[in-house]
Image 1 (cartoon, rainbow, N blue to C red):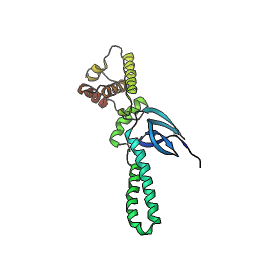
Image 2 (cartoon, rainbow, N blue to C red):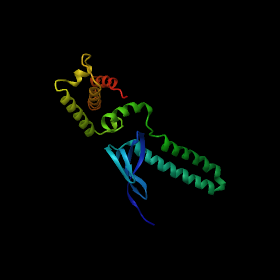
Image 3 (tube, one colour):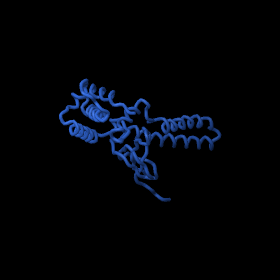
Image 4 (spheres, rainbow, N blue to C red):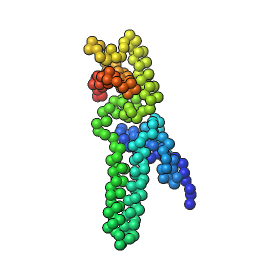
Amino acid sequence: MIFTYGTGFYGKIATHNDQWIETKFFHIMFIPLFPIGSMYVTASEFKRRGGLDIDTNSKSVLATYARLFTFLAAAITFFIAFTNNLNFVYFMAMAIPFAALWVYFCFFYGKAKKSDLPLRDKVGSITGYYALPHYFDHSFLYLKLDAFEKEYKRIYPDSNWQTDLMSDDVEIADGRKRLLFGIALFNCVINNSPENDELYYKADALYQLP
């Protein structure tokens, strides 16, 4: 028997626009043992993923273990039920719930929420990652905030983004709305406060996708 071990990706969740979250696990005989780290996946090939490394995602880890253990439990109890006529009903009563749980964890658990999709579409339009902001680690958040602030200052050198966003006297073109949304979003995630929440809600209302 060939003994195989290594790493692989498991626990696919939150799929939207051909992007999703998966977690890399160390495995033995393709059985995931422990997580190494999660990734927001934007491209996928056999045993390879492309995308952005993120903090280990607890839902993806739970999905991995739950899918594995409910599958094994269902398979074992179905096998026992069909090979042990004396206790067929008893083991079938165990196998069916395990199979139902496997279906739930494979096809429903961690599914992208419809209420999250508008925000994910907006984040994707400014970053290329159709993700929720809390998927990103702090280094990515700071990097994006700095990039948007510098771009805004370069294009509008005599302007302050907070003042422009809250002013009714500044004409805001579509390109400017995009920049303001990016700044306000990442600023709000990093520096959460009522004032920054207000700036974000104003920018979110202004920036509408076609």
